[in-house]
Image (cartoon, rainbow, N blue to C red; front, side, top):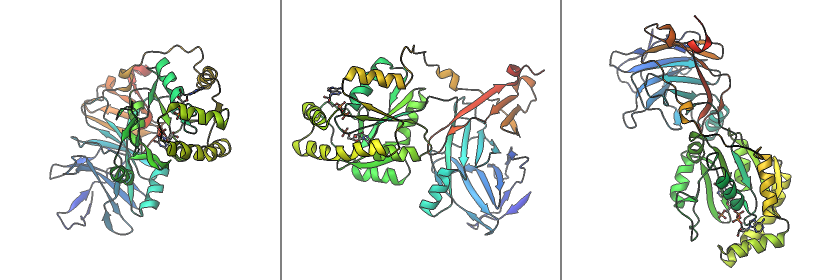
Length: 395
Ligand code: ADP
Ligand code: 5GP
């Protein structure tokens, strides 16, 4: 045990150096708070206690080079504090396993040196860590659909969602444009004030955003995660700039660009829809040419579809999503939950974490396989695989 002193000048805070092979089961301090420490190079990440305002688990860093405490910028939704937790160090992130009986809220990741964290450090010029909630299993890659206004994106997406309601979910974007007649807040868009949306963008709540036809549009991290949490494949209807940002993010997706058969037909469709003023129609048509050029040549898109005859284009879309002749299985939300013992310790074996009941009940030994993780901050970390020892047939 090695004492360090808090920079705020308060009572001495002890850093318990109980890390073994990258795992630590933490310790309760004299003041009743619980903490773990994980040392990576010159930095010790102390995780524990509760932020008095948010009641979430606190993170502080002791920098051995500077000989002082650093309060990092903490991004992402934070886990609520609990009775205790264990930590295991992976390459660029720390797994935090909460002592919490809730079957869908025990596994969290504190990212300390992932690509996302490194980018944010550069952008903000401060020490940064990012929380990401761990989720069991995987969902199919989200589908990003782009194309000029009036080409038929919404029509194709509606058909897909109608035919496969339990399979697809729509990422509801935020926009500062006014709602059209039939549009509902929270269903078609989250209609937002510009100043509020700008503040939320600054707070890192958006996966991507762009100024399109004079208004601000953006996809919140929550919009995509809510669809994935429901076990559905997420569909994003966003412009080319947004697609480029998603390409550069940690979200792995399939990118599809929809082209009109001709510019004349695009104009006919836009006018026939009758949802824009003449000025807005002209603006959208002016932007369409550049969007089509970028869509075809930027290398962002995996597939380009021409929406000439709607039925044919829809069939092509289904084909490239592997849905021709598909029978939709019922969703199974229970498969995404797992009960941990009430009191446990952890140790690390390669890409596996062994979680054992402190009462040493053999049937309560669990293996957590983290070899196939996907996603991560600013969204969830998917691909957790919990296996009970009894399922492994180990006596
Ligand atoms: P977007 O979402 O790309 O802006 P919409 O889905 O709103 O475009 O389609 C614009 C208009 O074109 C709508 O009135 C729609 O019914 C019509 N439309 C869509 N696809 C076709 C098509 N293949 N042939 C003719 N009209 C179409
Ligand atoms: P509309 O105003 O017709 O609903 O949408 C105009 C354009 O904004 C469309 O090209 C649509 O794809 C794009 N768009 C809608 N939501 C988003 C979003 O969240 N992000 C970005 N980048 N573009 C969006």
